[in-house]
Length: 103
Image (cartoon, rainbow, N blue to C red; front, top):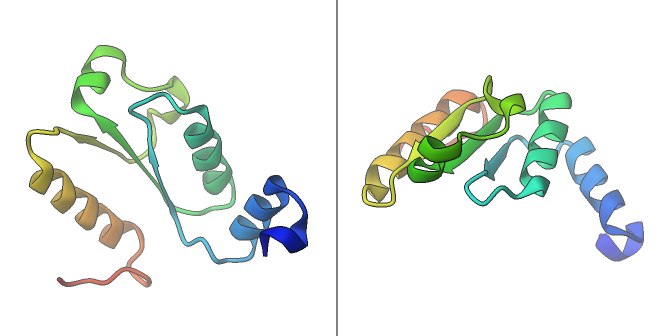
């Protein structure tokens, strides 16, 4: 598919617009501007967006002010099970028609 579209931007646009992508989970811990861009693009298309951020980074800097209204999972690396459970619950609540509802 990438070869037939010719360049990365077209692939990304096709992926989001074709309905293949139900929602987006983006990690903001490292300040990746692409994560901000893709989450904004998905939100503009009406797709659910779930952001994640390491608790230390969140406490020190928060994230960009444009994301303060979005669902953000603040995770502690010392408690990976809690973060996984919260992410699972958030995905299930955000995508009830698409997510697996039980383990």
